[in-house]
Amino acid sequence: MERIAQIRRNTKETQIFVRLNLDGTGKADIDTGIGFFDHMLDGFARHGLFDLEVKVQGDLQVDDHHTIEDTGIVLGTAIKQAVGDKKGIRRYGDKILPMDEVLALCALDLSGRPYFSYDAPFACGSMGGMNTEMVKEFFYAVSYSAAMNLHLKILSPGNNHHMAEALFKAFAKALDMATSCDPRITDVLSTKGTL
Image (cartoon, rainbow, N blue to C red):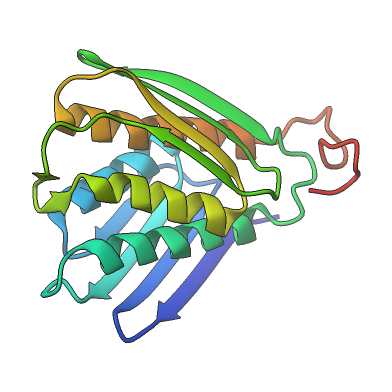
């Protein structure tokens, strides 16, 4: 059974198309109009081994907020749809990921109950045209749209580019783990019988 989602979202601020294949090989086709954000999403796809297409037309003449936040909403929705009924998946995923001097932690639970915890001490205002505070806003939008419990933390800070990239890659690896199937799990991994 293919675990693929294709989502379109059109508002007065953004027009977004996302296609996500959870069982891909890491192929990415990304164009959000924000080069640094494209780079982060490309890393997410490659390191999670997801096939990801993202096309965004946003009101970048205002700033990057709507483009990045709304992309998070659509990607989270795609994750939730692609996972489906969650039967057979591991549900939990975690990764401590090094990137040079930086060490990042991501832990997540595809519980159906959204929660977001974030601790990343960025020391600059922007990176390559992307406001650093939008890293938090992106992941918040993903976690609530996907109905996942998501914890992100920089354990050892350093270069701001490295911190952002480490968070996106750690998220990719943790999500790959959580969405992977385990033949020992024949239903959903919950005492409730549903997620």
